[in-house]
Image (cartoon, rainbow over all chains, first blue to last red; front, side):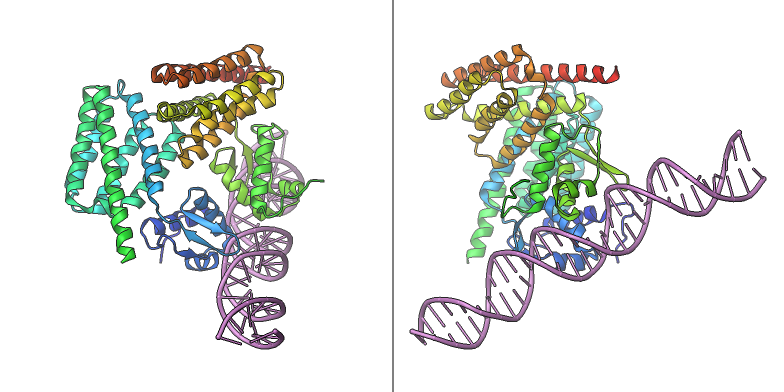
Length: 222
Length: 222
DNA sequence: GTAAAATCTCTGGTATACCACATACCACGG
DNA sequence: CCGTGGTATGTGGTATACCAGAGATTTTAC
């Protein structure tokens, strides 16, 4: 039995739940989902479920084929490249914007995230969550709500793409040290070093996710 | 009587129509809109209309207050600044990405847009449309569909914000010459000049829109 | 006369019944 | 045996009836 969040529209509950299922790979890429089934499972009628599906389709988590079915989006290499490109743009924008103005207090917050990551080297789920928050924190300093919102969308996508990519020991240590590089550059307000650090961080993540994606595809074909 | 586009879901028709009404200022910022009224006016039942409203709310064209009403979003200076900031990011990204690789043929397409603008100095609506397409064309060359999509969203917002800002003769001539600057820099593949041209173009547009917004606000208060 | 309380009316929120079409299957004819 | 067309079934698409809460209005108690 689940506590129903009061005051929250059923549409938004459905949205959250379905998205969570996708992120957790309870609903698998390519799988068909059916409105009636979802309604029943969630205990919500089709109307709000449909509304949530409209939104999920807009964010490209699912694809609807009229009168055939709705399908969880498949992850393609092109998607990963697109998303990583966007992430790089937003990261870079944020870092450039805050480089000269970030306060020590704000840097401390970032350091706290990295420390937490160091304490959660083995908890993959938690580690990725912290990674997302680290970058979200940086973006939030830009005070651009629209970008913050889009960045969160992107962040969830990356989490989705890369859930299994980060398991490898090496990538965990790399992530930590790359985050430290970014913090270091922020402290010294060295914009060039900052952009370099950010670039290689995203570039490395991208490579790892794509590698993971490819090996998954190979497994499927065997 | 209006021709119904066959094969298009009513949800999407409603979305398009309502958005158009907002963009045309048939529905005014701050105004309340009611689902039943919209349904009746569009000849569509509430269900697909509601679905379209979900999407419009996500794109921040409207704001829904549960059990009170739905309202056309008011335009604030913060919104304009945010949107212009995003536009600058995307523009810059696109120009950097294509600067070295753009073909003469692609540049010709851009020049065609500018020529058309010169021929439509007096048709404000058309002029703005061409402006949007000019920039959309540049962004489309990046082959990043997500950014293309978001850029279109942003483009509509700018059109909405600035519909009246561009009427002034000076801004029309400036826009044309700024576009020519961008083309010139693209031709010589001079990235620095390109970014300068892009920056000042967006910066100038922003100033004009904000000025217009302020004078509108003043009018309302009188 | 005033303030509090009941109610009335409008809204968006939700559930449900029905519709049109895409698809798969099966019967029938060649 | 194969192909073709009808038909059954299940999907998303749509319309509609009902619900609950917010806010204005009226009533009522003092």
